[in-house]
Amino acid sequence: MIGFSLTEEQRLFQDAIRSFATREVAPIAREYDEREEYPIHILQKMGELGYLGVPFSREIGGGGGNSIMAAIMSEEMGYASAGIYLGVYVHVFLALNAIARFGNDEQKRRYLVPGMGGNKVGAWGFAEPDAGSDPGSMTTRATRDGDDYVLDGTKTYITNGSIADFVVVTANTDPAKGMRGLSLFIVDAGAPGFTVARKFRKLGVRASDTAELSFHACRVGRGALLGDESGGFMNAMRVLTAGRIVSAGFAVGTARAAFDQSLKHVSGRQAFGQPVGQFQGIQWQFADMAVELECAKLLTWQAAWMADQGLPHIKEASMAKLYATEMCARITGQAVLLHGASGYMMESDIQRFYRDVKVMEIGEGTSHIQRNTIARQLGL
Ligand SMILES: Cc1cc2nc3c(=O)[nH]c(=O)nc-3n(C[C@H](O)[C@H](O)[C@H](O)COP(=O)(O)OP(=O)(O)OC[C@H]3O[C@@H](n4cnc5c(N)ncnc54)[C@H](O)[C@@H]3O)c2cc1C
Image 1 (cartoon, rainbow, N blue to C red):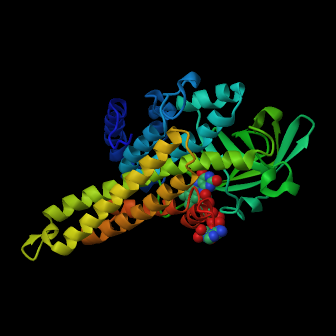
Image 2: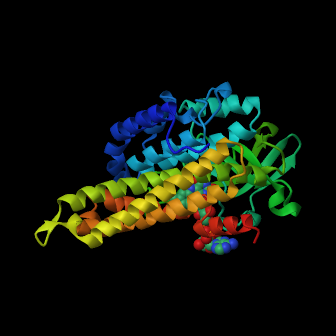
Image 3: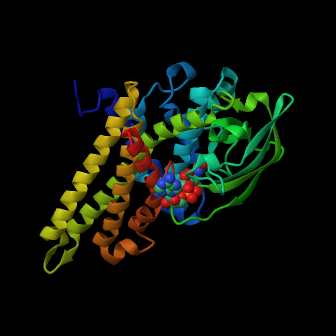
């Protein structure tokens, strides 16, 4: 059986999250972008309303949702503000998801439950100054010392880095094994030896918090190990694969926002005695953008559906992420042109969409890395 419509439950969820995003998030998107500050109250409110638990099972207190629900939430929130949603996305789909998948009962009680409620914020510490795409070059170490581990290293460009209550960090417990020696740890903010080294200013997603984190003789107990020792690389890849589907939905949402505003603009803006949207060249541009948006959405929902069926979906997740994020960059770029100078001005949402989306082609594995993954899955 094949179907292209949402179930009643999914449709009701879409209406609810769309109304929340429209009412609470879209109206403050510009202000927080300009302030370069994260509106933490949005994450807390999403926790109160149960949205942060959507992708997690009911047994652990989540909403019992699935990958399709996650893609829907990302699309609607991405439509309202990519910058604000990025912090939610990393908290839920990377930090909490790692704990939901690999955490023991105590870790779920300490981090996942308050995280789903919006009472604790998580971050995902994977990238390092000399290791972004290439995890084999990571130099953060976790050395066993009695019952403890001692972490030394630097994680950089970390979303939520300076506001997080805890960070899920990759560190090497067995350097001789290269990236197969990586392990995951949960490190609390305030742990001795863990500091926020600096905060970054950015081109886009300025409402999100991005920081560099330093671990210097940072001692954590054995209870901080998340999943198996030396199982960190495979576990991180599982989290990132799931995250790629959701980030594809995110890109569809921001692209749709740029598309909708552009359609409205060309329907009203006059040139040469008629609305700009009456020129055939412009109409064809919209037709092409509409096709691209639909392709990205179908790829995203296909990958989400495969994940929900328990089918292998590494290739499909990368295809959705690659296509949706590049489509989003194309459409937001065209939206600036279609708005003329008005889209270039800081008072316009369009310039913000244009700046915000470049990161989508970089984070969660760059477009090059997605192409590498797809090619590998094709047997090359
Ligand atoms: C706003 C923002 C937020 C972020 N948030 C987080 C976060 O929360 N947690 C986290 O861990 N990281 C985060 N990152 C970091 C992000 O994951 C990395 O930037 C990304 O993985 C790329 O790594 P890099 O920047 O070191 O680029 P590099 O790995 O140095 O890549 C440089 C260039 O080389 C290309 N390249 C590298 N290897 C290959 C190859 N094998 N084949 C072809 N091309 C290749 C890349 O595609 C890229 O074009 C964030 C980044 C940004 C910009």
